[in-house]
Image (cartoon, rainbow, N blue to C red; front, side, top):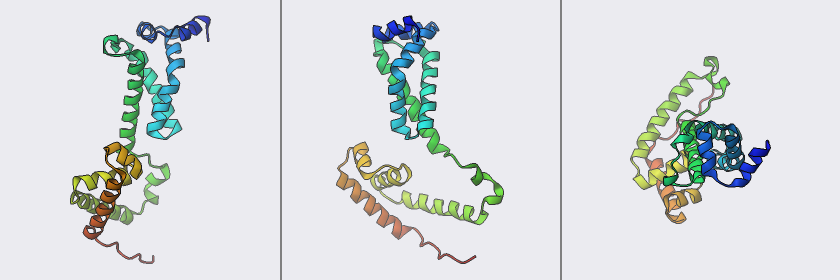
Length: 192
């Protein structure tokens, strides 16, 4: 790290650094990166739980900062808040992308390895589940979707929704009982 960058790290004026980044100053950018790459990575890792994707999001964050430093308005908040909100928004975007198009191993995409009957049955089953979920109350549906599709624990769901843990447990239990009564019983396995 060059001497002037070290003095920028000690200066503490993030707004001035961002103004210099807006003028394409690589030393100022290096100083901001040194200061905020750790917190940005922590935000991404906390949301994604995947080191590779968190590193990619951190790169996206600093690319966005390099390209968009002119958009920073000190009247609306501190530079730290702006940088960490960029990290938060990029992390949320990555979570949404992952939920829309989950990664499928290459071996699963080869047509010869896919059992067409199983694939068709899975789609039919998914349709049954979707219709059954629509029959639940909104509260039960949200709790079940967060638990089974979102991967959240009951404690995390309670915190996220601001509802007591016991209420979430009841909603999930009642929702599962209702699904069991609405969904068709699985067909018995047949030998091939």
